[in-house]
Length: 225
Image (cartoon, rainbow, N blue to C red):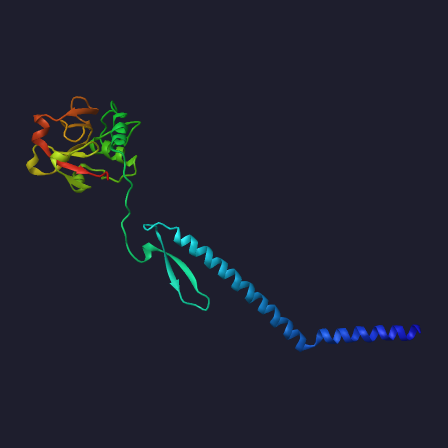
């Protein structure tokens, strides 16, 4: 009896081994596994698609991302940078002009130093204006002459605080900017400006428009939206 029981167990083991090694069964197992992976992938893509669609719907119209439809076996959505399709200039946020004026006023008394825009040392004329606007992430030229084309032109009647006032060295006919400052007076008020002068004060000061500066006045430029 013991012999037959052992033999029977051996036959069962052999049968199981043969079944496991059967190439046909092995292929079926692989196919079933692949199908399971594909099904899982499809479910994952559908979930991702739904999530992506919600994300795209929440984007603002002027966002730097846009949605582009892609045709494929399973519908999907791609996101690409708008800059790669259409070149669009950046729009700077509106800055409070009074904050610019207040920041400039905090520098009153800083000495005039040729070629400097370092508040710990002092400023020259253009260095002062450049430093003030740079604090608000507004790019302006480093040298006076270049301010003739910066920003937009402003009519005398529309001049307001935060505008840049331009002067020539001798008279306004030459149209070469030699000195400049930042207007601190409101629209319609007598013009006052803050600048760093190499004159008697030799530093950052506030000046009212007078006949001396009126003769040298070239114009006004606006760099704040």
